[in-house]
Length: 201
Image 1 (cartoon, rainbow, N blue to C red):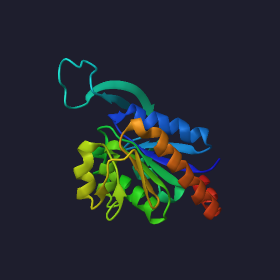
Image 2: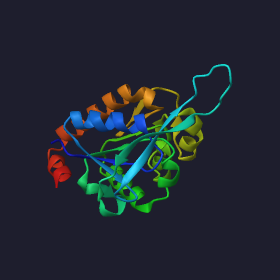
Image 3: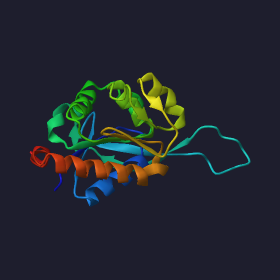
């Protein structure tokens, strides 16, 4: 096992923002710890523009998705348990960003210089934790203001690496996001073998 990845989520987390990285990271040998405000079952959602081109629709439509179980609550976790974090999107980050235990964990992971990946609305959590100030990031276009309010430079690209933080626009960019994130995790493991033991503690 390569160590634990922290994956925070809540109700209305986006299904493809979440399930693709979850299984891809497990496939690569990591233990993904799905965590929420409480350890319970959460509702995911599908965000997509309806396919009827004859009727304009400017925002994404939200439909119910699969359930996903959080096996831990934020308040019971420590940053030292993890070798990285993956912050998914959807509507969940709008309220998760106020959770002080969540912010404590992501700040602790950031303070150790460990890889953090973030997609879509997940940028709202990184902004609330003040992790992107002075960095270049990407996110879904409607969250560009959140990135700028967090002190970052927003660019419209599939995936952007700035130091140990990797960001992507939407689940459509999952492949380049996970490719970059896995390389970051490999480099972190190579540069500090002790982190494997920390993540498995």
